[in-house]
Image (cartoon, rainbow, N blue to C red; front, side, top):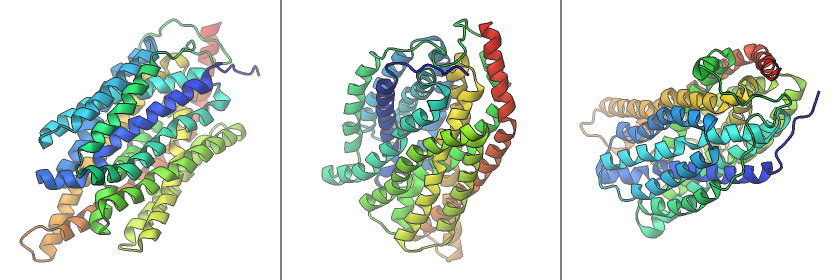
Length: 441
């Protein structure tokens, strides 16, 4: 079989995409770290705290579909460049918020800017690297996620302490993003389908959304992404306040512990996971998805144990939860690459935009607000069970801890959806290749 070509500037562009992805996740993580000072300043409920993450996520999902279509038909470098400039600028504006509602509206604007990035970047990677290197390339690109989280969780607590203000990190975070946006406009893009062994025509396809939605594997992967994002966004939104309330940790230490759980694990999970995913794919076409399903099982068991164990020693909680999250990162290298394998190049940005819409509208969008609602419910129940007449931090700690048991439940559903995707993957991947051959004939 003919070896697919790789773009000459592939690794240079990938590094730039990785850096932008890092600041993407750095900027969106700030509210999750400073959320307790914000709660106290504006006297917010956990439902309102969840609403901050949900509003951002819903706008991100809705805006992503038309922006993904634009990435399939327009200049991806311009879409990414302007998007990065918008979300970085509005991140600075977030530091000027004077009320809960002003904070919420600006976060929605940040969501629009960030929505421009992922579909265009994923599409570009598909054209830079041939199929047998994409999982590795995607793993490097997605390293921006854990590194962005690590950088945020390890530094923002110190920024708040140094400036004695939760607003300072928003101003600081905007600067590197605005500088990086300038470099995006100078990317030399490869042609659509340039890294495929079969050349594809540049002619646009009719009914692109219907074509993507006709792929059964895509449906199962979107469902898996929905439940997976529910778990990840619930964790990212509420882990710091849960550690502060339930384990009585100060903000800076709670942020660092969360950085270990959700960030450092990704450095290993994505680097090693991309390599393992490519290896198992060479042995079996559905190997990547089976690896992802097994990883979700381990993640569900570890996170479930850590939460059900109660007030265990802090090091044990962080260690067990981190092990689960390390395996959870295999979702990105396995699933994102599987979408590239069943969707032809002319539809990949559209497919990723639809995929992200499912992930964020019904996954990431629901995760924070549902956990927040459940936290308020359990807090009220704990107060009534104690015969108290006023809410206090002890009851709120119990409520939030109990609500986070939704995380292992969502990871279990992710595992089941990935098994179903593996069952129809081979057929859909073959259909995509046959379609490309027919188009090239």
